[in-house]
Length: 83
Image 1 (tube, rainbow, N blue to C red):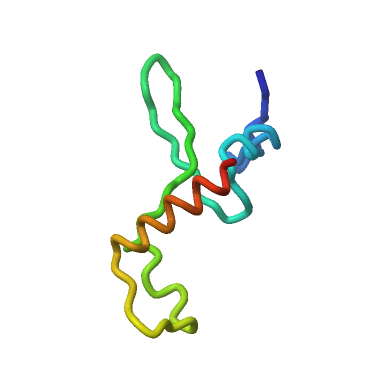
Image 2: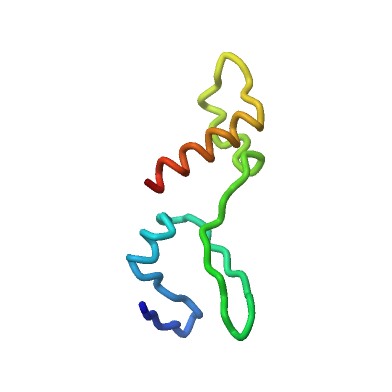
């Protein structure tokens, strides 16, 4: 069991082992999902390709990439990052 303390600003430091387990880094988003009996599920936010659209305008490709191709690549890279 890992513990953390809530600051006066309501902030909590996520223990290193949990950050590594969730594979989160600085500026990544965390989702808190209330479940039952005062318990909360914490998970890393997963962005869809639609949310990422336009972030890399400076890296134009010869042909446009479909949302389906982007989602597939994101899933593949996320899987590689977790192994």
